[in-house]
Length: 180
Image (cartoon, rainbow, N blue to C red; front, top):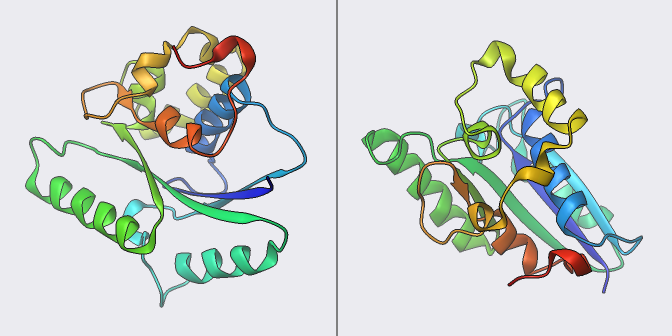
């Protein structure tokens, strides 16, 4: 079955850090073929998840990419850091709003608790080192050291994500990386 997966990421096109972790996860865990198209939309910040009337029109980009793909299903997947949702009311409310937005539109939501670097690197990374750390993650093939259970969570705990749960809905796992 042909599928287009549109990943809406918090990063910007120049840094493209979040996409590195997501792409490495897909390449390591899943079988891909020419029936799978992966697209990205750079939101620059998660606060623009539903932007309509500014220079970074996320919804318009989603609609355009969806129309451009004509031979299969399109799935929109938001990839969002939870930040300090359990300590900060504003972070919790923003995450709740994004979740509601995704549910209402039948989009999927991949979350990273507390952020993508904490999930894949087990540490916080300052903004000035994010590009460098993401590149090192790819180059050193650190995805191979990540335990699947850390990426298959239903509840948000530090250093965890639901990324494999969401991707399992649409992509076949590689034979040696089947769900146990």
